[in-house]
Length: 492
Image (cartoon, rainbow, N blue to C red):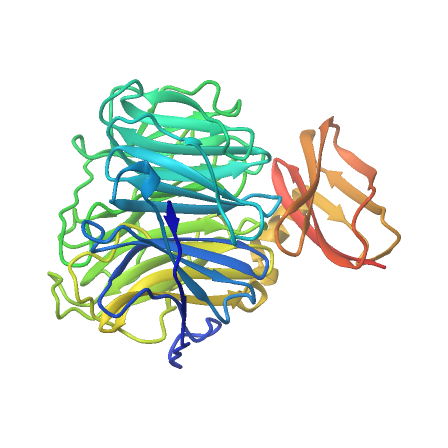
């Protein structure tokens, strides 16, 4: 029986976040004596959802779930739990929204099983689907989607899928196909897809201090041999952080960006590597954070539909960390797939202390074609609560992308600014032959149309994209080795 209690929230804001980030809003709080921990967020336009575990989960069977219908200005919190599984311990929650606007919730129960829940009414009600994992020993799931497919990975210590496990659903999570993609190692994983649907799984193998990348180009049916991309990883738990999740993003079919927390230099840092050839080779390891004193942890990276990378991490100037450490959330942006990264700014509008040693193992940042949004936990109100902030992509400078000029020199795209009718003429030029794909997104970042044009010779090409919704601003994206995006408005 699932139990739901609704709690109305009073919004609290401070005025010290660096522009263009908004004042912070309280997004999920289930009680002044309960500490909300690691969190995840999903969004579909003005519908935004957040979820987290609690530090007291060994005695309180609850998953705090927040929902906003006005772009994050106001929130309602639900005490969500499912006791039909027969396990009190609710933990490691994951949320995502697919292209149809359906919301997918993944909950791990103790270290026994991962369950999936589906909402088809903007997160108001939930229906159960089959178990994602078998009932063995599981930990740290993470999920993503592409098209109609949902993908999830986790580490399994026993059962039929011991090692790095993977599951795929093609029916909105109602059934799952499971496999083992690395039977020789366990570790904390991250997963993402490239724009064309290649799947990348990042595995931080704790016992070997190494990082592996595993890739599938056929929707998870077959996988490459795990590729070792990093050795010498070190990490020691401390006040505020333990076992942080690594993170991976693929802004194009060629570019991949990975981050993890490491203390090889004496204190916690966010380290990163990048690939420009679809994971075949990788750059040398570098420090992401621009403050190398104190502690930096819980890094997260995601990409917007234009290929921009958005990154967050926790920062404290004190080391080693303790109950007296003051924390803040920092944000960085890259508009050239991580080749250069802008200096960090403060996303949280106040510094805070944590009343407990564990602030969760992950907190996330997401972007669509208009907004970048973040959810995290902090202790500014004596207990840990979830907080939310957002920024306009235009204010961050996405439209002032100097790297885009370089791309236009090799791949040229022209779309009329204003269209009358529901057919958009698309004109593009190639300096060299390439496989070509055209996609159309709405302002919420949802993929409305996708067409594989096959191999096209160098030169000028013209096509038409028909049956588009009227009265909307749309984004036409051309993928031809490089990626170019143009905006147009379809009049009613």
